Each structure stands twice: as structure tokens, then as C-alpha cells.
Amino acid sequence: MKKTKKRKGKPKMLITVLIIIGVVVVGLTVGILWSLPGMREIEGMKIESIDFKEFKNGVYTGEYIGSKDHLRDTELQVSIEEGKISDIKVIKGALDKNGQPVKLTGGKTVEDLFDRVLNSQSLQVDVISGATLTSKTHLKALEDALKKAQE
Image 1 (cartoon, rainbow, N blue to C red):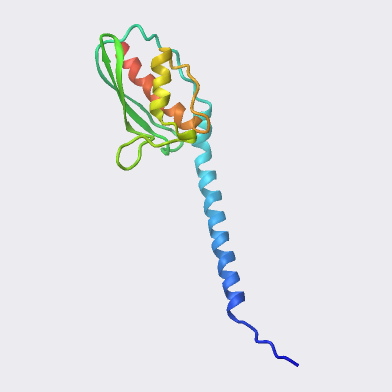
Image 2: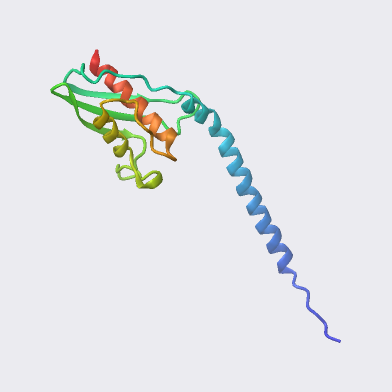
């Protein structure tokens, strides 16, 4: 009759793995619950229509600052030349650590979103699918800057 050795390490390893998985799940759950109010705030946000024919030349800063959380706070600068938008530069928002636009869902960036704005001469454009909240905060910051360009 063969004697089998009991491995004492396996149960400890299994318990350790289960504890790690549990901590990760709890951490993710807390993170999601913490960010839900901010997500709901952005989902309900409306982007106003702006008349693209009444801009004053200059550089204007616009921002979106969340009241529930600051995960998607956004700041940008808009340059107006000859009454038209000549440049939009994101200062804070969907940028990587080097200040370059982050690729969002489908490889698109907020620059693609701003190209739609310029082509349609309207803020009422389709947001980047899969990056709706990020798109909306950037449009809201642009709206803020363009309102200043009309004053």
C-alpha cells in the first residue's frame, strides 16, 4: 500500500489567492460605487448650442469641473482667429503623462471629436462611442471657452 504525502502548502496558497481575489473585487466595487455619482452627473449633462458666427479673436480657456468627483475634470484653450476656431488645445483631460491625446475606444482621441465640431460648426456632434463621458466633459469645457469668446 502506497502512502501519499499531504502537501501543506497547497491549502495556504489557495487561501492566499482567494484573499487576493477578494481584496481586488472589494476594491473594484468600492471604486465603482465611489465614481457613480460623478458618472450620473455627466450622463445628465446637456451641451448647449453655440452660434459659431459670433466669436471674438483671442485665446480662451474653458473648463469642466465635476461637482461629485474630479475624475474627468477637463481644461482646454481655444484660439479664435478671424472669428473662427483655429486651434483647440487640451490642457487637462484625456492626455497621457507626456501631454499627448489618449487613444480612447476605437483608437479615437478627443482631437477626432474636435474635428467633428469644426466640420459641423456645432457642439451637437456624436460623441466617441465607448468614451461618452469623456467626450461630454471635453465638449462642456469647449462650450465654456466658446461662451467666453462670444462675450
